[in-house]
Image (cartoon, rainbow, N blue to C red; front, top):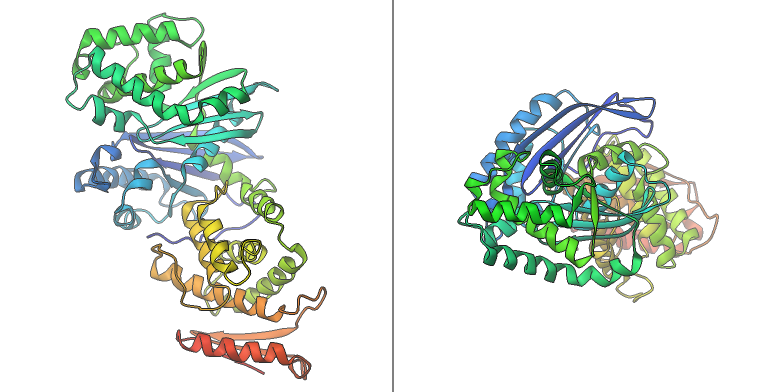
Length: 505
């Protein structure tokens, strides 16, 4: 698995940034120049990899992996000199469901130096909406955004820059093509079966979305783009995608009878094999939500990732908003959380060079863990670290990749009691070592604030090397704190069992 820890700076340091979308159908990369806070696209690259077509029993076969690696080798030539943090690579549905995804990611990391993040479905939906909202202005109008990908379909209702409802459904043009059009044949029977299956998937969100309402419907990415271009080229509608124009496309597909024989002006040859499946899903969306007309947005996931990179170096980092929301949602003692966090970051500043914890990601993870370490306290005090880890693992956390959530959950699980507690998640040896170090710093910070006294800030000096850590307090500071002394002695015993030597004076 790739490293989680990026070398970054909070002042936006890059003149050029890039976003790579490892989609279930296609891999895409977009490169942008950043000038005075504005993005200018200077390069777009894409390859139809069909990663999802290589999923056999939820495992990526060798052929699909090789197609993906070949594509990344091409992308790597463009971004090989770009610094860490200026490139984000996100994996979507096919990599979410592939049990052997880290085998593929490990091979990919031999080709390119930038880490690959697997993002959850709703995080993908959020990023899609960021891309749409930043590239199209509809004023105060509420928007329904529909993005039909290779393995999943994202639906978002939002207003201006803010998403209101986000959902990701497990249906896409590649997966539906395998289910209903595997031999390439297109007829009324299998097309209607595909539409019905899509409608059944949409039923779970239909009422909530209809209740929310919207003013404008927008399609983004492959299927919507292909449909929009076909309708425009054939002059079937002057209002973008309409149900009548969709019927015209359906008629042409049925007339062709096979994906190889599709002959539609405006349709790229490489999209023929999955086009009928995509149109079936789009038809179901129109029917379920009674859509009369849909425009097309050029902005989608990749553009959303670009703007998210910029946001991470500004006051708009969505992850900070997510953490603040959870602080309020779970009624966390914010004063205690801030004391623990302040001490933990002070400790990190002293050992980061010796323990090679110099990245901003390390600082961010430790800060978020300090603020949220008591997130499970409202459920059960005796096991609140386990409840907290579960909450972090299973919650929708906008802005966070799955790896970041798992790393944060790891720190929260291990902040008390057994240091050897572990999640069922695979970290690299390097990442696990970094998390061990951060966990020790968090545990010590919580221990030093066990009395929960506001303003009681311990003054100490840390010295570290390899797996050794020595804490030196002000003279006689420990003499008046027998509980802290006992806790430090107990912590030293816990850590030595894991190969770490903690001493203090």
